[in-house]
Amino acid sequence: MILPITYEKEPSLHRPSQPVTVITNEILDLIDDMFETMNQSNGIGLAAPQVGKNIRVIIVDILQKKSKPFALINPEIVHAEGEQFYEEGCLSCPGLSGNVKRAAKVTVLGLDESGNDVKIDAEKLLAVVLQHEIDHLDGILFIDRLDEKEKQKIEKQRKLAKM
Ligand code: NI
Image (cartoon, rainbow, N blue to C red; front, top):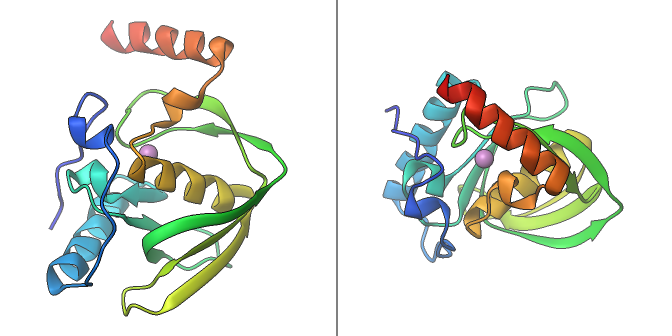
């Protein structure tokens, strides 16, 4: 089922999400629906608050051969190093994009859909997407992380979008 995506002003995007304590069928159904919703919008990542659920669930599909689509429950960045810049967008902020400074490499722990421990060592785009989606679980959008110059760019994009 395709779910409605929440946009910038929605409170669900600005508050911290709760950890999952039990992986219920409801959560597994939510993950299926999140994949359907993300694929329809050609996204490469989606977090549960973007479909109005404040629980710590993300999905990622960076559309590269080496990296299969996956869901991650209660993801946590346990190591970050270096820096990289990437022009990010977000399904919750249509029409906006900005260059965000992120860690170059991250190690993320979490659970898969069966409740197994997962450890992901990520770099490049995968590291960007993981940091972006985990930010959503803490109520942070990529536009919150922009420097002044990039914020000005966003304001221009907003004006254009209204025309
Ligand atoms: Ni996003």
